Image 1 (cartoon, one colour):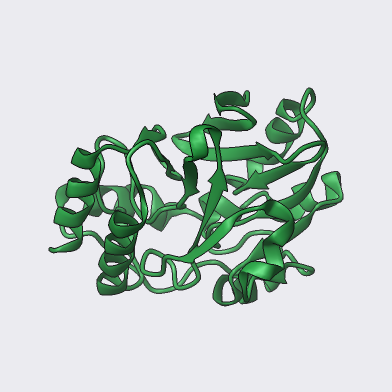
Image 2 (cartoon, helix red, strand yellow):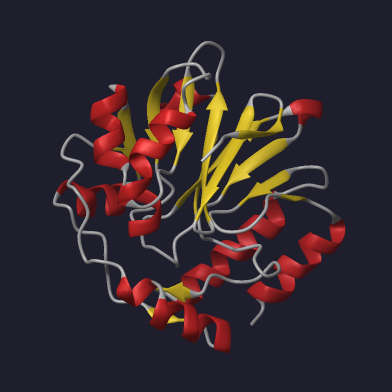
Length: 233
């Protein structure tokens, strides 16, 4: 793995189609998501030339996003943060709730052959901190949004980037692979579609959408229209 710059001070690394982001907040780093459990040593190595990571933000508790959180927290001496609903799961090492695939072939296949085959547990993140309000992550200089649906406790984080724009770390609220689409599974699809509508109303042309799976996408009016169309299903 290697962190590649996608905007000034903002980096992306990927493995097995899952993204991990790193934000340089002026002398220290913030990691957004941690990938699967075996990502930890690769992430540690990739962080070598970057400022030390002091905090880890989790968009949600799923295996492929929070799997390395406990180990990286210990290695890096970093505090871990997530929304209360998902933080409660991770304190016990659980992550899975009842979920159903999105109503298309990609959703059914990805759920059956990928998500359903993940182990049911990760290493417990016993000291994880709950994000109750934006003040809980004031050190990140980030906007906090709630994006439930794919996961009950899914959060998004808006980080300021060049030109007065915002990079939106949205977990699996949407995906950009193989195109901009809804996530492949939901714990609650109706809530997930409402979250996609929230994104459509929130993002502005020139912003950067940073999904958990797929390439970051520079927002255009066409992308906003696409999000609105998905949310209306």
